Image 1 (cartoon, one colour):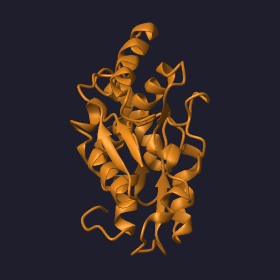
Image 2 (spheres, rainbow, N blue to C red):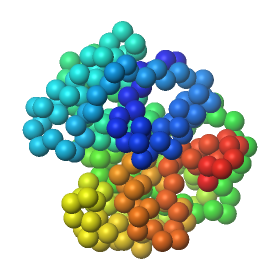
Image 3 (cartoon, rainbow, N blue to C red):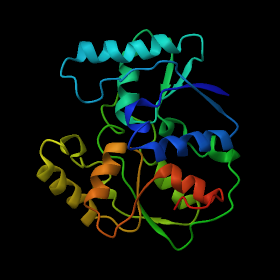
Image 4 (tube, rainbow, N blue to C red):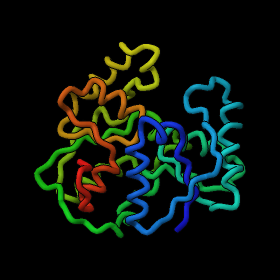
Length: 226
């Protein structure tokens, strides 16, 4: 299946690993991601003016017309903004976690299991709220690792804010919030948000913070992903 692909700013910068992982997972499953030409910033969290933010995201959807009705946006802030800009319903906008159900991933050839391992799936703020743009399955990462024999931890902090959007303004607040999550985690922390990855990695010490796509590629036999 063909999807229009919106990488957004983070995935072309500090979160290139997530971009590469998403592209590889979709390719392994037989899907094609076609980059939206000349895409622009969606506004992320920076615009206080919601009307302007919606306009920016709407521009990206306009540029996707004629490519595909389904649009993939891996960054949670980007997918939220594009979903909100899709008021006329011309597109179906997805964060990959919207799609990564057991059925969707069933085409993956599993070469490694996760028996005896423990992971902390962490979703953060934007993937789980508000309800209008949240992912439909709020335990999608837990189900994946448990189906492969692993245990999960950190249930009480999976939806806590890490303070990532305050990192360059009030770093002390980001550290305080991130450490609350890190203290309740066990094993590698699985994330899908570039901001969460940056915040938690900065204060993680010896704890590992990895993108969920890295784990998917690991069980599919890829080297150097976990």
